[in-house]
Amino acid sequence: MINLQDCGKLNKEFNDTSKPYRYVVIDNFFTDEVANQLCDDYPLQDDKRWYRFRDKIEGIKNVLEQGMYGISKKEDMSDLWVEVLLKLNSLEYCKTLEEMTGFSEIIPDAYNDGLGQWTGLRVMNKGSHQLIHSDARLHPHLKLEKKLTIVGWLNKDWKESDSGYLEIWNNEMTECVEKVEPLFNRVILFDNTETSYHGVPKVNSYRKSFLLSLLKDTKNYKEIRPKALFVKRPDEPEEELIDKIAIARANLKDY
Image (cartoon, rainbow, N blue to C red; front, side, top):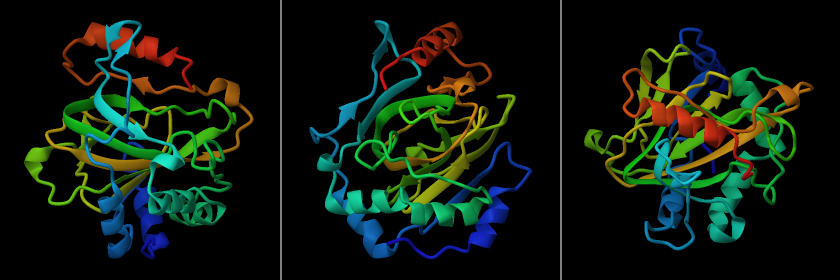
């Protein structure tokens, strides 16, 4: 299902110290047959299986995230999608990820019927956005560190005008260092840190993606936050509202 990768080459790219944090982009991730079938199995825009992300927080418009939908339950996905996600969230594939990254003792996320807390299909509609943030770092149920994240895209015939780039920002939030185009059969693998800042500020088309996270045991889990941390880009509009909603969102207990 997954194309054989040069783990040594990916390890060097992942650990490139010129980047603000560790990540690597991998093209042609799945075999052509599997990638095309996963794309065909991707639910349509108006499918009732999609659940909507928070439009409001504490009664106020959620300016951090708009127009985002997800599917996270096995029964709401095709058999192939379940098979692929379980393969990626397995001990066997964790060993491959250790070769790609140089990390040790990566653990699958056994929550959510074996799929994982954050695993599933994600879509962003035209006009949607997700502002820059660093992901949650603590699994709220297993009390393990969220260490690696995989995000993949299945957008055929993607054009520059469609936007939907995943923006990578530096630690000081002064510069966008890379914009990753969400091309068909491409994934990004990144290290989940306090300052692994990324987001999708603008989408002009129907943007298909999937994601999952892998874990690592840590003895200092009480010091790790269980919610995403949203931050402002320079000259961000609605600065005060972003700060207010970011604080409110960080304190939600809707795990």
